[in-house]
Image 1 (cartoon, rainbow over the protein chains, first blue to last red):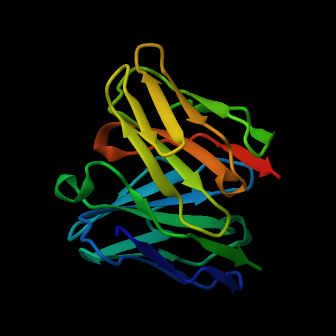
Image 2: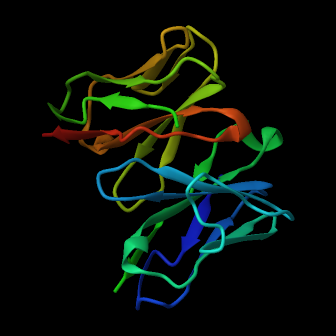
Length: 118
Length: 111
């Protein structure tokens, strides 16, 4: 149980284009999902907290207009990197929190998406 | 931003060896400490969530302890096996269920 999928696993795009990444909780509902990114040799850094039916909360230094987050249902959150540039190339990974009823505070992670912007 | 440190950065052990890693974190504003195991090309796997000072948890050959007063946690692996090879991440949890990750300890178990 507690499986989270992420799609795509890898994407290469041209500078200036937008890329959408999907995060799905497959066997549980998640009112809260989190988006992280990881640059080489660095730790996972929280970008934003996504709550179903409301606006996402972004961490300091993360541009909300560049990283659009939509959490339209209890099993799906999407991250859109708009007008991507090479410096946005990174590993993006999501997690889902089933809430106290589903498993306490444990966050369940997807496998991540490797984004390369040419 | 929390300063979370994990040591060692990497570790090579022989099959059958026991090993341990350290996670240190600020002891203020503490809610819980999470340990994850992350194999290449897979999702990070939740190992433990620990909340109380003195907590000790065990899952098979893996166990962890927590000291919230001094801000550290140890992860132990007894009788390491090649399948234990992975990166082990710790993350203290603050308000809003936000996790702050360390850079991890990369374990390689050799035959």
